[in-house]
Image (cartoon, rainbow over all chains, first blue to last red; front, side, top):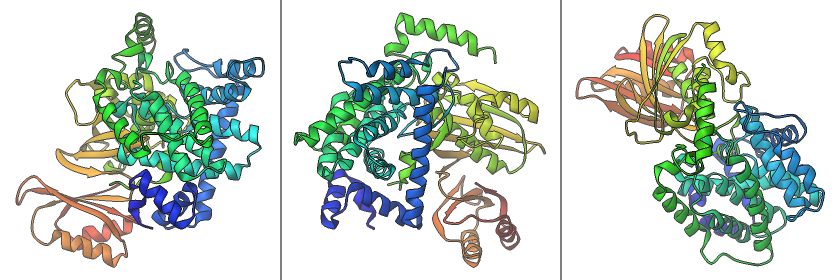
Length: 297
Length: 220
């Protein structure tokens, strides 16, 4: 397989159209080619990732999870239960957002998760896929296909921009995770590769410039709640794409744009905890308090 | 362009809280452990950029210690790394620097093995748990840790690279990437070879036997 296929969204979509394949199918073939292994093995590895995702969601929603700092834990469970009542965003969105938060709460407690594409943004993809899957009655096989779609979209960002908060701010972490999830939802629902990429592009456009400003430098505040936002963002953008709405700015231009914006974001707002929420009076007070606790090592 | 695996994006499966500051840090130190090749008794680690600013909160210290002890990123014992180091007789000292560096997540690891031999490695955690080694004992290199890698230190002279690649060919090891670096003509030089299949300890012995110009061989 030509390694240039994953150079851009345009080359990937063109290849899908030529071969009559979904993005997920191309991703699976490419992985098997790259590592010279059978596609069955590639699929089996993704089933394992899905298993870890399932258990991290379940753990965060059912067990008492508390982070080492004491800043987070238990909020995912609260939103999930509330979502079954008269919520504004609807039970499905509430539960997907809660599931996304659950994974990041488990992560903050030094639990086991699958980075997707990073640990700080690890809740969005499992939260959205598992919850929407339950709502729509999707099988694990369909969810696994969705994870390959998501992986392909994430790879386009990794190849042409960045997927680290230190490199490009929160837009590059929770933004990219949400874009990956949006594309997965579209493709599982039978949308075309172009629609999936449009959904991903629209998702990033909604959070362009989002800074990474973790309080006390921890992957907790605002990361956990931004995973909730990412879940909702992914779902609304998938809905827009499936409704036939297109993105005026093509996917590849959005990726390049995100990269440029990320480079322009000052260092204070790229995971250094030197700006944004981290330097509000409360943010600084929390950091000072935790410094004394962790300083005992 | 680097060839990412889909599991670099959907993955790694890891212990939290941060892929770059925790999982990447474990991998970085794990590579150093392999390079040293024998038990490490002391390490001096300098953290730069975002590693220095937010490393403590992300457990970067625990992650680096865990890696030096040989743990992998999904090990649930990472959070107890300080206690494990004490048990295993590894002393680790941290320093923080505000010196400008090429990548925000950079660490310099000076490791001393039980026989007193020291190795100094500078590495970057480039996002999503992926890493890049950029310096070994003062020499600029570029290693991803994605492939089995051997690093050979030798006195710069004609024919060494040919000898090494001939031995690897005889061992049926395919070279994926190969780069040579040196301090100056006729001085210390390094070859980094990334291979498709691992260079086994037996093959390493063969290399040392058949290529006498090799001063040192590290396998990662």
